[in-house]
Image 1 (cartoon, helix red, strand yellow):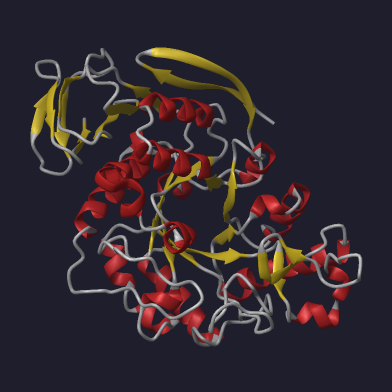
Image 2 (cartoon, rainbow, N blue to C red):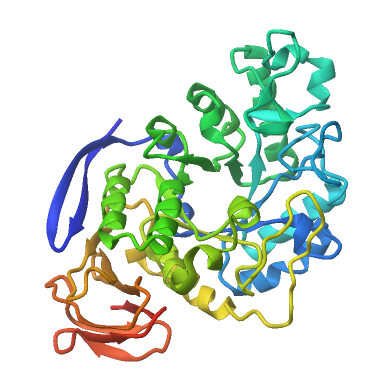
Length: 448
């Protein structure tokens, strides 16, 4: 196990944050993971048909937009007993090794995966290890796999009536779960898992499962947990959710909190180091359906927050329809198709950011060769500016996170030389001019 020094730099000051164990060589991310992005696919709501074959037709458009990794929400069949709504939740599985007939057949899924790989995508699928639906096949064949209430009935998950929790003290169940995960690798050649409620499952299961599953092939592992609160899980997963950031940033906008509170949280994330990454996002399936669209949360700073998600250290995560943009909350248990048009007004915006993320070494996620400097400005209470550097490569990001126009100057020796604005292609020498005039919602991204 190697160790290395973690660093995070604010206004030119190096903050030493101790040491961090790196994963064993087998679990280190392959190089593509440092430059990828993730696009979450809600198959049910993506098209009128709601099928793999229908979604397959959209993949060339997403490739053109710069998407690298497709994450499919659960593809397994949905339990019918105690289901919610008329269609049920995809997170209440009735079988871990079958396809939801709502989406098509196993052959349809394999065809889509093959086409995705042909186009250059990586593919990960949602894996719901904590719980199943009430009529999962295991409830009949292996009822001992489940937690039980004192009266002997299956134990419901907290606050969710349509799912029951598995018993991870049962070693046979663990092996069956691992075999089910291997099934999808062997049968369909997917590239990894997004693990639902990963921190609700004992960490030693993931420590057991990952090396066993990766005997088939190396994989990408995205876990739904915040590593600040669950640090042991970060030693297993390649990337984790930035839940605290998402909630804190929403509170920042709605409650007029200080930018310093966001900087303080980013320092906490930086102290985790680069042996794992964070996934940054402005929305996803849970947030959209239950808490509102990204525009409800972030208002005027929605686009600046999206720029941050694509350029800060980690992995950018997008949700179905953000390229429109989607302005409505999608139903979770009913059919509610995204209101597509022939216009994808945000596609060029995301293409510019995703291509830059993939191509510029200064934006590599989880790479200790990259340094991040938060820059001093004359309006630190309104403007968030930072520069990321990897050798000769540099990317400058300037965001107006306030609700008003701002005139300001960047007063920081870490910014110098000639840059090009990646959106309007204008050139600028920051030795001579560090002055800005931003309107509400403005942002700028420069490449050295």
